[in-house]
Image (cartoon, rainbow, N blue to C red; front, side, top):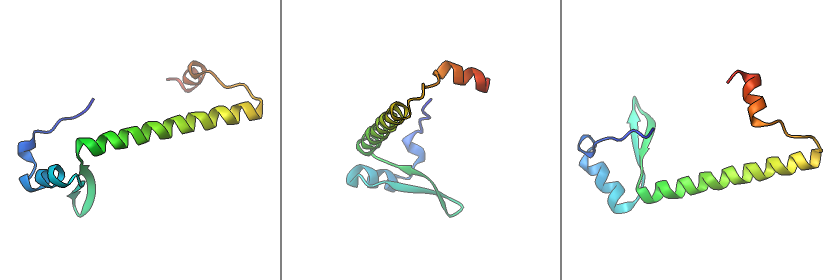
Length: 84
């Protein structure tokens, strides 16, 4: 589930910065960055990058499995063993 926040509770200056420059705006709590406001364009880029990393991890796992000669454990079996 994606939480949506009404823009009226976000300072106008922060929204303008993201909209006009595309630069992320850090959100701080107690002096620590806890979130970032990002543009939809940057979010799309981050999602695509995450997808690419997932594909690379999958390809690496398949390669390692083939090189080791060991059979992969089916997902359903792992879930059952872990009680999920």
